[in-house]
Each structure stands twice: as C-alpha cells, then as structure tokens.
Length: 329
Image (cartoon, one colour):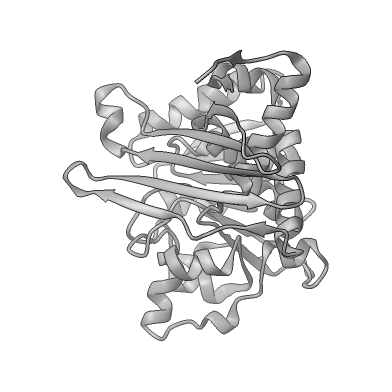
C-alpha cells in the first residue's frame, strides 16, 4: 500500500488537474458510471462535531474509495485543524487496497474544484470580483478554483472574526506572489456581496449570511458550507432571484441541503424550480448561463465520487513520480 501525506500531495497535484478530474467525475456520474450511496453523518453533539463516511465507486476508472472526514469546529481553539480526513483507495479489478492518503487537503481542493467547474459554466465570462463569506478551512480552495477559471482582479473577504480573514489574505498572497489584484477585508457580509460578481459562501451557518436583495444582476453564488438540514447560508430571496439553481447532486441536496430544504418545508420554494445537476450542464442536457443579467446559484453538499476520482489521480501520478511511502500491512 502507498501512503501519501498532505505535503507530498501538495507537491504533485495542482488545482488545474483537480478541475479536470472533478469535471470528468461529474460527466461519469451523468453517464451512470458511478455508484455513490448518500454519505453517513455521525454527529458528536458533546463536542459540536461531526464525522462523515463517504464511499463511492467509479466504473469508468475501476477504482473505489471511502473517505472519512471529521469536522471539529472548536479545534481551532486548541491549535488543531477543524477539518481532518483520510481516504482509502481500492483497485476495483482486484480488491487490492492500494493507497491511504491524507484527505484534508484533497477535500478542500475537490470542493473548490466543484465550485470552479460551476463557476466556469455559470458565472459571466467577464466576472472579475469575488466575495468570500467565511474564511475557514475550505475558503482557500474556493479562491484557488475561482481564480483558475476567471480573471479575478478583486477579492473581498468577510469572516465573523476578522483575524481569520486577514490570515486568509496572507495565505492568498503567499500562493499568488505575482498576482496584481487587490484584497479587501469587509466588516459586513452585505457590504462584501454588494460589489461582487461571484459570491462564495463557506461557513457552517444556521442562518442566512446576507440579504438576497444585495446580489447584483449577473452575479453567481457558490454555496458550499452548509451540509446538514439545519444549516443555511443564503435566504429565500437569493433563491427566488436566481434564474438557475444548480446542485452537485439532487439526492444529496434533498437529503442535506438546509438552504433548500427549509424553504421547501415552508412552501416558499419548490424542488421543481431546480434547474439542473451540474452533470446535466456538462453533458449538454441543460444550458449554463444564457444571459448576462441573470443570477445563478450553485449549491453543493459534497459527493464522494469526487473523492474517488481525485484520489485515483493522485495515486496514479504518485506512482509515476515515485512519491509516497510503501508499507506492508
């Protein structure tokens, strides 16, 4: 078995590669070439935490994997990462467990890439400003993916505690030392949304982060933080103003997306108004952005076949480059 650390993965796998792999995975799913049970979420109420178990099989590449992710928001107070994960990759032809790898970095990467694919299909071509609401563990991957698919000239960061926003700004400057754009730290989420072509919601909020009336015509929203039925990052106004609401998977959205489930339960919105799954747009069955002025919204709760796809890509590249450590169990 090949064991791969976060540092080794960072050296050999790029966001550009991840975007390609994630797009391919969505296409495979649209073609019926994946098997992905809805993930199992185990709450740890005593600690305000959650552990997620996410299995998947991709027939097209003949690999299966299971990712285990723990989300402990209070870990930051202890100097520990709030998001921790591992992925076990299995060769589907033989059943051999071929790799065990850090999934924390890859989770951030593939979640970012999912938003990147959505941004490529739904945001205006000339979109050049992005507001990031929530500057925690997932935010950097969101920024990397958006910057890969659009020429971003201004980033506006908002976080409930400003220190985290400043820390993300430093991380972005380190990642992009030659970038000529600007970074602003907002004191208010609505202020950040006011001037943004692209809005990223990356929090564990249980109530809307901003007033949906503040969205500019022609803007695009990536909402990726809320992953349980009681969580909500955008309000029903944002939902109703969006001419195209797109999800990563319908099954996952109906099971976990509180942003959609709560308005549905109140009779304020219907799932019949959903435009498409992302794979429907990639396969050409549904259109992406059609008008410059329309508002579009992508809601993602995460899907395990993305983890299988990127784990397989990392494993294959690691073999080519001789990276990682071989162990015998």
